[in-house]
Length: 209
Image (cartoon, rainbow, N blue to C red):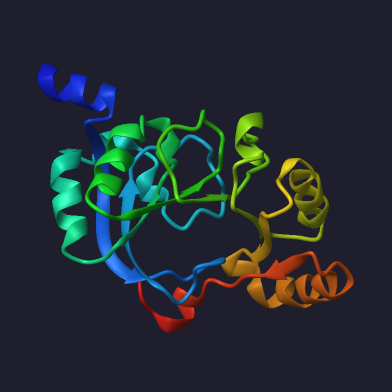
């Protein structure tokens, strides 16, 4: 990698961009709404059920200057969702400042395993057991989305909900490959614990990105 580009990545002026696309948000609080998604490469959280494992190796995804990303995003939507991979492995402040300066709302989907950077209108925290979130992100999360693989994950979800703010939305979402077995006990849990809501990956039902 050229020295100039390396420096740009280190400072957040360029990011390993895996893909960028315009679609409908499929999960959580904003499901059903249009948004421009920016998927950043690089992740070492290592969820065995991850459906974008190709995002893990940042070296596979070319560093792209954030100016180019912002220009592309402006063509499609006033809401941008930054996801990964794990986007907080990188400095998100330059990108989010540029997006907001261009009049766009900034959303992030993160495990919270790295220190929070960036200026966000909405933070979706999706904690993972292997690398727990940094303590500071719990209070600023707008949405807590816990992926449910088995019943033990419900206990994990409750532990993760201890540190969040009163306004944070709480979601239990079945891992896609286990949805048929997980949905019944998620429904039962939500009925008994109505502070939680059920979330589904509706984009997969709609067969869109």
